[in-house]
Length: 509
Image (cartoon, rainbow, N blue to C red; front, side, top):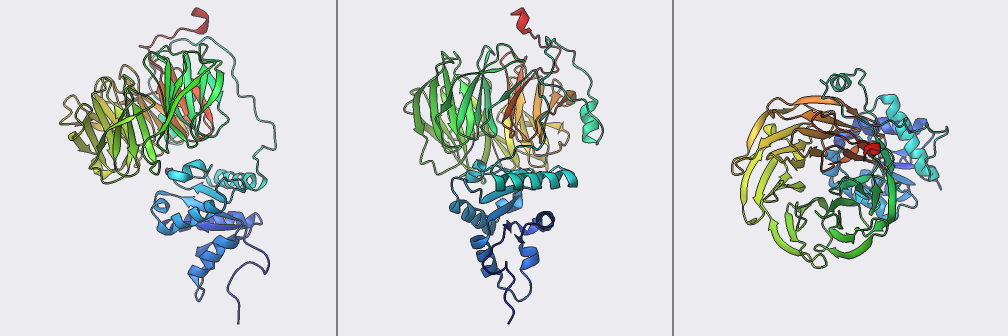
């Protein structure tokens, strides 16, 4: 009697491929690339043949395969079997020392919960040859435990020149890139390297001379950006969290920094002397079993909003940092709350969940003040408030939708919104004057003139030097500088293409 298909006796598979049925095409492509590279792959599409015990085979694959490759997509994240498979691989190697779980994103999808702590290989948006190279390099790095390139990296710096204010140019290059043409790429004024995985949060002190970045490694870093061309890390790294940092915010007087993590932990730091930061308090908001998708601090630094994976957003009073007090649980959403944002006056909170935008009165959060739905029922994943009352939300359908909330009880959609981007819009930021909106677009960020909301115009040049997905955006208070953080572990500083902004070069201070 023939034995069931499997590896030779006494040996094991190199990889078990875990994927959703909707991604079978990706699974077969990935399996082909790996087997062409000499690896042994167990893939249900090929190995669950007629007469085989499918359940036993998958169970055996998880047991004997050296590593599990999980093809992440929106469909996969909804799969019960997929969740069991990747969790089994992670349980066998919880610290990631053996790199038993290899997430491979085939869509620009989130990595919720514990998946956010595992570095992924991203194939979406790449041409076939580039995707092959990214896959094989990622696998090789996982097997060897290091991803050092074979050739010397190019010098990343640029000739130092005093930055000057530039007029608002008409857009040409950005649209050309979307159409496959050659776009001009803007160069950053300065570059920081966090060396701690993804940059998940960024914030400026009010004077614009100190920047903070929070990372996937749970650490927060302080950067002296007195000269934006040469950011300098100052002080000890702030290690108050064991999960990815999703909030970093300075108090209005710049004396205190508040950081929050996806595991609902909150830390308060004394940073009056950035070279000698000090932990004031660290506390857990609730049980810590829920994932905080997003956090936001009110402009006065007193109230914290946290978006929960349990379909609830919560407000916390931070008057006494050591003892946060829950003010309210904002219920009524029917899906995970992806993002939260305060209005400029701190009186209104915006939340997005599924296709719904909801507005809440912070002083009386017991009820929804107003709500609106995204056109076409698109699910929303990011939200931001402008100083003039506009609200912008990014979506999974790669669009940005805008509402006028002058009357918060009746959010008015501003048509036509922003044209489709190339990827899910995970992060948005308005300039302090509300005239300019920046939206992430996979490895890019794009500027939009939204001074006439019904006639948005893409302006300036692409911010395209990040090697991986841009994850966070932050304008300095004067609007003269923008910080972008990305999955490549690097934060970059840029001068917005806005002729209304005056920029003082370091030599003029």
